[in-house]
Length: 230
Image 1 (spheres, rainbow, N blue to C red):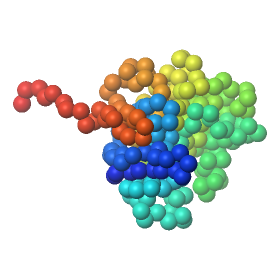
Image 2: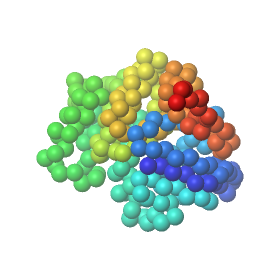
Image 3: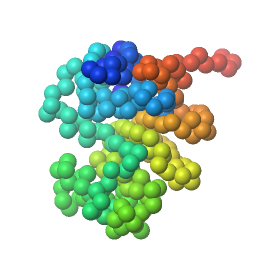
């Protein structure tokens, strides 16, 4: 699904953001990306979207390779990805359902299919009753739910989330996380970058990849496991 092989990403002024990073996220996995600010979490998410290319190594996402990627292939890849940001990034002059519909319009969805699809998505995130509200009329948690609905518009194989609970209080943050759990349970892979170590500790069944200064310093999937009786 997502595979990083010896990936290094360097910038002319700031130097290496990632240093020989390797990991493999399989279909249906839920992965926390953790680490301090500047550790490389957002860089990994940008590379998954092919918004940037690695300086060295290879990134493979759902059959696409960073080494073979052509500009005209990028929209096709991104239709397979859903992205949720900390700051929501909703269009302020459009209602909640219009924000979700826009994600379908730009990918060429048939007009007659958009309204039913938007209705189902708004119901899925628990906001059918707020479909006609503008972003400024919604709470932070509600705005993030709209952002999640928008990210799901094209039935992505992978949901990427960059600090999605960072601007929310504890109750709203837990609600958004529960939504991610439900999405993952339906088969969508989830990669969530977060500073919230308490959240990570409360959900030990999910994989954790920790970054420090651009390198993977811990991957729970690589830890030795004790086995029971044969």
